[in-house]
Length: 255
Ligand code: 13P
Image (cartoon, rainbow, N blue to C red; front, side, top):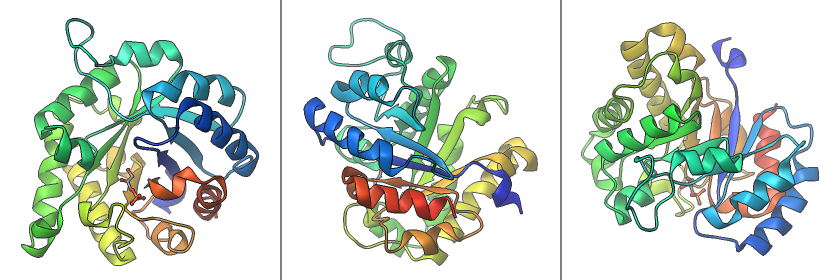
């Protein structure tokens, strides 16, 4: 019952793929493919495609997000992009804490928190990513780790601001590997995340917050994952780069 009252969100994370020219082509194919979707549909594109994405999706049901944001408002941070710059472009969402940023770009729980707060303060909706790597799963610390990541990422975020927060559970071992978490594993951790949210903000906020699963989600496994009571959507990498594959996942979420 709770699940029906939450917003199901399917978000594509394009990662470092598609030139602006290629992005425009993909968006042209996506617009008719996801028209009338029964869930919210978001595409998170590289910075270089955001302006075109916002322009092209105006008046459609596609929402546009960025893949990262800097935490300072402005200043001497060569190569970085601020939340205000994204808002000014018309960008609505941003991803924080993706495991690839944690793994390759020295992202920590603390910087994830700073980015999340800066983005929320600027009026963006934030998809906060958490998830364990294979060694952590094998050591049996998944739940503790994800609880900690979630708590630190949300430090200083108010219950009111939680209306603009989505949590994405992305087990690192399932990302880009074709090795999806079982629907039971996804459910178990998404439920644990919702429990932390209840501890932090109370049951009403926990019940209202969208919790996504991400990691090799595709047209073939989306139905089963999305049928779980605490899995409210998906954060999609590889399968978001093809209009038909992404549209199939969007259709599964709308059921
Ligand atoms: P894949 O769907 O390619 O496994 O990527 C998942 C992901 O990292 C989305 O943010």
